[in-house]
Amino acid sequence: MGIKPDQHWMRFALEQAHLAAIEGEVPIGAVMVYKNEIIAKGFNQCVAKNNAMLHAEVVVIEQACKVLNNYRLNQCTLYVTLEPCMMCCGALVQSRIARVVYGAKESKTGCVHSHLNLLEQSFLNHKILITSDVLKDECQNIMIDFFSKKRKTIKVE
Image 1 (cartoon, rainbow, N blue to C red):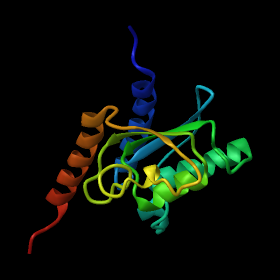
Image 2 (tube, rainbow, N blue to C red):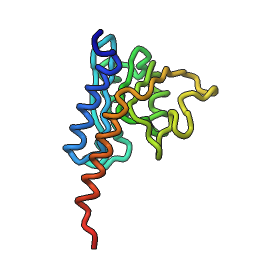
Image 3 (tube, helix red, strand yellow):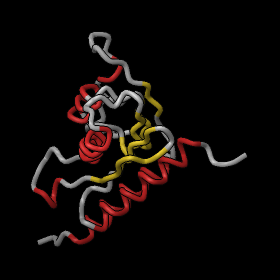
Image 4 (cartoon, rainbow, N blue to C red):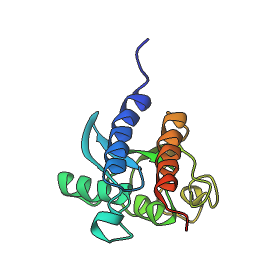
């Protein structure tokens, strides 16, 4: 049997995370899949563009909306290497995304499962299917490696 579809698409998100690390950004990558095709891809750009809102998910949602010429992404699946934060969960609900697949949990700011379970709240007008822990180890390791290298470059005075 071949590679599972979620793992296949998550590998593309991991490629984006690696690009983020090269750029000095926190290595979170994402891709948007529509009708079995990647229509948007990206990574965190907060540092490069001095904009706290440019998380990988937001970058990819914006691209996908332009590609489809619609703010509703109700036939799309977002693959992201790290559990979305509160801001990104809001963007996912507002864009009416069909499904979110993420790699590693985020113990500090994760709001899909780690803290607030935001996407599963009964008061929301849109329900999103969620799959977690896809290529979890690879997604965790890129974060661990990035911050380990970053700590080594900080000079202790």
